[in-house]
Amino acid sequence: MSKGLVAVGLSGGVDSALAAWTLKQQGYDVIGVTMSTWDGSIPNMPHVEGREGCFGPGEDESIAEAKKVASRLGVEHVTVSVSEEYKRLVLDYFRAEYRAGRTPNPCVRCNQTIKFGALHMAVRRLGIDFDYFATGHYARLDFKDPMQPFLWRATDNTKDQSYFLSRLTEDQLSTVMFPLGGMRKEDVKKLACEIGWEDFAKKKESQDFLECGDYSVLFDESDNVPGDFVDLNGKVLGKHKGIIHYTIGQRKGLNIGGQPEPLFVVAIDAQKNQVILGPRSSLSCTGVKAHDVNLLVSPESPLLQGELTARIRLGHNGASAKIESLSKESISVSFDTPQFASTPGQILVLYAGDGVVASAVID
Image (cartoon, rainbow, N blue to C red; front, side, top):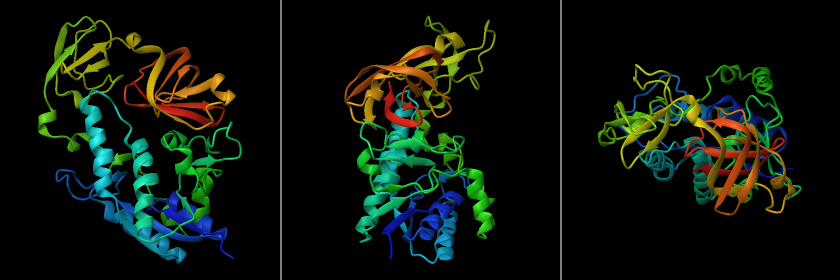
């Protein structure tokens, strides 16, 4: 007897393929669903063979690989266009943030609004009444205790994707399954080889949200407005090529010589079209403020009062922190030791042990 119908988001990679295989082995009915985001509206985006990003003209290759997975499993597969939603909720957001001098995380945004939002609704509009939705993300879920987090790090900490999922609400995740959350990546690849799917085990992984990896193709020539590099006192140091090319903490590509010490991007003033530079020490921060809070525990959870680990960007290992103030709209966090380059637009994620307790957008 079937345990229910699971719509599995198939990307064409080994992780989603093995997630679907695992669920079928466990007795679920499975249908493969793949979202289509590319509509050809960015004519200057080059196609990259063996694409390492999700969005781009090579999307048909990934869809074909997803269909191959469904065929091997003997399950139905549907491709669902969410290109309009993706353009509006991810690409337009991405552009607007950079134009305002902030640095967004498009993959976090895509999970929040598309993969676990628009895609769900589009599949249901097709008349597919699934009981669960599953992906190949490395994360774990547990809804037993509202005082405890419902989103947890994966067993394989080197592949953990809880940071990317931290903006999802309890309602969004209530019918989601992550079959690989308790597995290690090396074991997933080994299993793929054992079941005869070695071709998937050897595939490159998607590393970015753009197939070509060059964000500049998303912007108009009018966004490349030169302006001044200035120091912390407002002294002009040189010319930049447009604020969309810079982010807080950046050192490479500034082409400013003759300084007593290396310079970093310290701030971006979109109104003045200025990029402010300073020494690394000027990027040290003892806390962050953020807005648009997403709580992943009850507001009454004692975990919010204790010692937490804060990550202020994907590549940040995390730092001991505590919440200084918290409301539905905003959060203020202090660090035990100063951290490098808190960046407006990036995502603050707070962990209690391995569980995510909150996330917000850094101001």
